[in-house]
Length: 185
Image 1 (cartoon, rainbow, N blue to C red):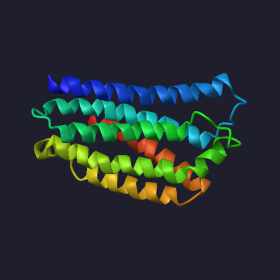
Image 2: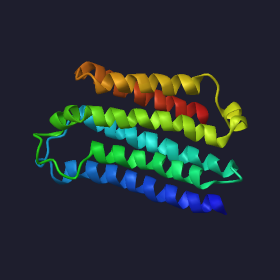
Image 3: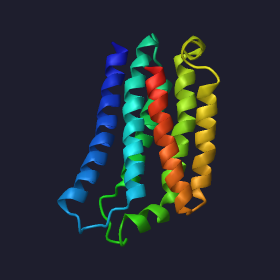
């Protein structure tokens, strides 16, 4: 019963995150001259959408938790709100101050990759909440290696405007995430 209640808030906030991404991407079709798109930024939007879809699917495992505390619920609320914050950073409501998404992306890279990096840290806590038996049954060395390497790469991305690095990073993150999803499910 408690999980159904928690699942509702998960669905609302993650649904808003997905809706925000899709709505933002549709603007490129509806108003192509409003703000000039940037292919690398679009790939990051697609990656975050994939990450949220994976997260939402994986959170079904929360049903194994028999006893919930307000602290766990509060943490989960903050964690999923980080995804909404990331979606809002990637696709802002207003682009008046920018010539296009190229300028916007690089001017907000510290916020974007700081928030993405934070999601990998929060993922460790989320996994801890599910318990040691859960971790042992589903993860091995790859999970911490994935999260730590992704976090380190996000810190680097925060501090560089190198287009080749950002292009390689989003491609590596997407290919890895697809591979990870395939192997897990």
